[in-house]
Length: 279
Image 1: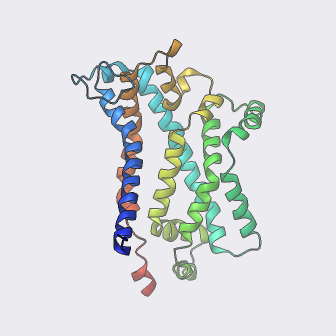
Image 2: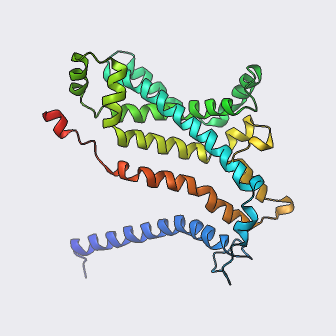
Image 3: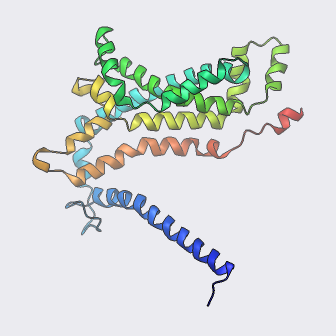
């Protein structure tokens, strides 16, 4: 019996749904393991329900040396790097969005190429440079490199969002005597709030999970962020404290989740420029 077009479409849809469910399970299983293992006193690599719920793993990791100091270091490094990235990206994207030049396209293509460079390819010369300028093992040096590594893609994103803000709004402010910097700060950035939120979240998340950069540029143990200190749970001879590792992972993920929740409403909103343009 020959299949009808409707039955073939139904079969393809069911196959696509099954593939999506398999992919979702692949992403969900590690998260389920982390949650279950964090409250399991005998956690291992298997995804199983614990015999009894315990908070002993959290009690073991909630100490200044293991959690609080590394998390504070991560907040300082990633918060400073994100702030510097967003400010520099806005200042760099503004002329690219508002002024036309023959160099705009080559510059944007260069930025796009810079986003594809692996950080491992530039760490050796960066390390040598930081030694020469006395920035090795310093918080400010790591913040600068964090910002520099995220800046190319942040500029690209910021420019695309900035293109959605009508230039007519700025021209009205210019006639009232506002400068370009004032129109950027008071008109463009407030109207592209969701775009700024996207760049902020993306930059912070990429810095928060970065292990290699602080591991290479910071030498003092007291300055290490949580992304590096998590390596301490992997002991010698393959011994791993899985329960404590899972508990630390839950705590480590909390700032990123909170940041996303705080900006979720702005991410879901539009630019709401219709009334402004008509007025």
